[in-house]
Image (cartoon, rainbow, N blue to C red; front, side, top):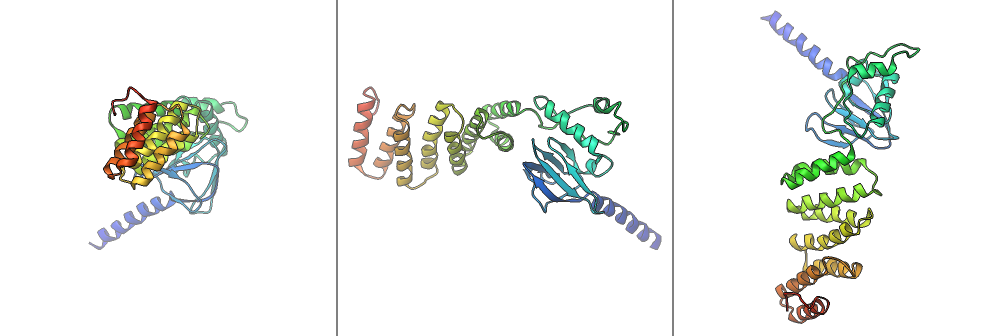
Length: 297
């Protein structure tokens, strides 16, 4: 019985030590670095002081870098454009030549998946004066790692199929990765606003639409997003004054907007619901002047 207890403790110690050996701490971060927790399978921003565990994944963006420290004091510098599991990184794949290879492959093939065969990886360093790099332990992670445009298209498909939570997850991750001055960013936050709207998460929808108004060059998306900020406010049950103010902002900012008639109608309904017949009639006159063929007379 004592032998059995001792054996159990030995097994426990070995397993525990193995887990501890692949737990690292983040000691320096430059640029955009993300981690994917094995515990909840979600991406989040990686910051100094974070503890990373065996099955967690770390990802560095372009021009980014992260330093992680193992329990034995070894510091590993992970360069830009690298995606790898912590347990793989902490075994024998911390060779800087290998990490550099990962970076160059991922940077040059971002429009494809990040999956690269071990044969291709070895061939990439064959003939190196320092010899071949052993990549047998390298864990190339291909799950959900495609080009930004492909991620957006997948999110759009999720949205069309009514899988709004899936779309939101993809779009949040995509938003972190792309330049907020690009058209893709505006497309991303606009669709994110729509997904939140469909989920009745109106506060989050307003935030996303607000970003769509000030980014990108698509005036149609900016127009619709500005109107939907007010619509989301109304559906959220915000104070009438807030929704009215947002609708006025839209009407002033978008003199040729595609949703002016809808904005007038919503203002009219809000005033009616507040028993403010005088203001309701004024809005109705403005609407009928601008849209003489309107159904609301």
